[in-house]
Length: 496
Image (tube, rainbow, N blue to C red; front, top):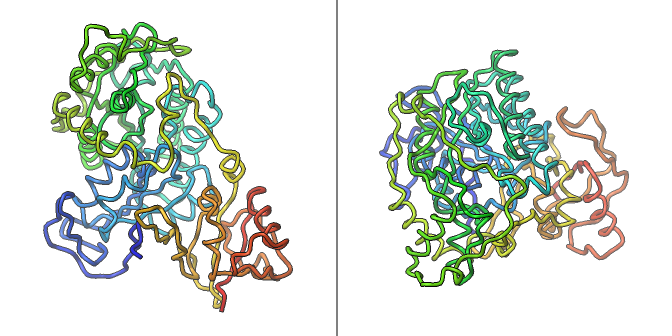
């Protein structure tokens, strides 16, 4: 069964053939090591299985075969493994499932993969969710960013490119030097994350760049944001929910233009600078809904058939507008018109709306969605990493080598040296299948035999005979309970 995510292929040969297009991928079989363009860059793209991060991966993976691209993603509700289909077979692409708030794991990844560049997309981004689950925004957007910065400082990376938002400015027109005035928990945590980035640049001379972007739209965006939400509602025969009177307006830019802008800044941006990324197109929420109704051919004399005016957000900025002269001076301009981009986006959602995410998206289409966190996900969010080590003390490999077929069926494809994120499997009820035929608990483990980066360890003094998949036994239930009760690490050995 073919693995859904590509695995690393260590080979010193150089692929000098022209890179293939995403529509007709023909990747080579060797992993990048060097090229006439200069030394290999090992780039960590956090949040790369999400909307904007995936578009960035689509651009740089085939564009730069001499770069090793590691997408690092927690796989939250808004991410999808399908977002990475276009690049999964490229030899310079790897996927690592992990949480940016796990300091030990992040530090290990940077060291193990010799990361020299971080492009930090990972974030909680939906304003509505921030009104109801603001602690999670602080945890991810502030603490998670801090974790990455500290790991970057310790490893002496070449560049930390931090992705932020124009919402940190508040309502007035803004340039990059304007004072930040965030007005909701989401933008406040993004501004706080930026402050940490700036502090690390000034205090430790960490090479950083910050970007602040307009509202982004395009294929693969989780339908909690206004454009994909309106499109999804209309495609399902439902009404567009208009917050307040619908007069709030936003500038919109296509994800492919943002990916190109990030590419430009990555290669030509100045360290220590902030770059606004935006487009001229601006439209109010009400006008946007009417525009989409027309694109769907649903115009009627009675707008109430397709529009539903609901209570406004707790606070809703009237408009954002940014000056983008700095990035245009680097030679970048948005290429895709809103008219062309929205037609492409509508076509994508008509085809993929109900099969792209692995859960029912109806929860995102209500007027004021609140992030739904399953109790198991909440429990297992603190779980560390399941480590599998061979009997000869072989090295640890920081890669989730998991086989996933098109029906999202999971199979254990890891070897005795792989690192596996226990939370990933626990949340999907896949722990039994993962450990079946693969590993047993190793007794009498000592601290001295383990790497330094491991968080607190539970030492099991007797072998639980797990390997048959019988999780209904007393031993199986005990182990499952153990996996779901905190930041534990189990030392496992492959069954001989």
